Image (cartoon, rainbow, N blue to C red; front, side):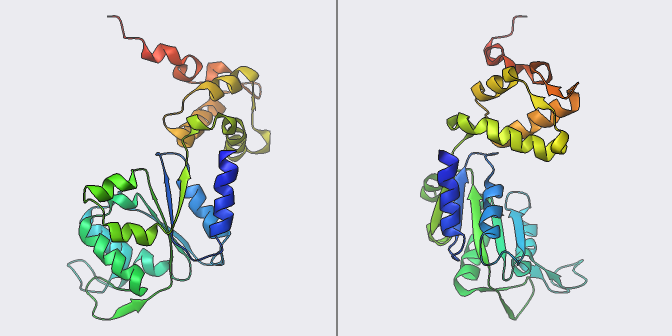
Length: 250
C-alpha cells in the first residue's frame, strides 16, 4: 500500500532534524504530511509555521520570511517578526519552494547554513533553530537544470525526499480518504455513501487529487437527503467521465 509506505517514511524521518522535501502533484495532501512530520518530531510542542512561497510578491516575501525593523521602509512603524523567527524551535513548512525568487534563494541558503539571518533593515543577526519541511509540485530536476532553482539550496532542503503519488495511482485509498473527509466535514452523523457513489469515486481519475475529492464531498453533504449521498449529488463528470470528453455539438 502506497500510503503505508509514505507513513513509514514519515515515522522514520520525523524524530530527526533532517530537512524533508515532499513532492507530488497539486492537491495530493503535502501539507498534511508536513503536519504529520511535525507532530511526530521532538519539536511537536514548538510552532508549525507555513508559508506558501507562491502567494506573495517578491518585495513582500523577504519581510514575511525574515521580518523587519522599524523604519526599514516607509510604513514600517515597528519591528515585525518574520515567520522564520516565529518557527524557532519548531518547524517551518515552505510550500511551493521552487517558486522562491532567486535573490531570496541565496538568503534562505545562508539562513539554513548559519542558523541565523538579518531582519530587513537590521544590522544584528538573529540566531534560530528551525527545522525545514518544503514541498513542490514541480519536477525538481527540471527546475534546477534550467537554472530557476539553486542546486545547492535543493541539496540542503532535500536531505530526505517523500513523494506523494496522485490519487489516480492509488484507487484503494479513495474509500478510506473519502470516509475520513466525510467525518471531518459532517461529524459522526455524516451521510452514508451508497455503493454506486463509492464505485464512481474509485473509478474517477481525480486530476485535482485529494483537494478535489474533498470539494466534491463538501458539495454532496450539502445536497444530500435522508442521510445518504447518491450519484445525484455528484458532479456529472465523476458519474459519467466519458461525457466530459465528447465534443460539444452546436
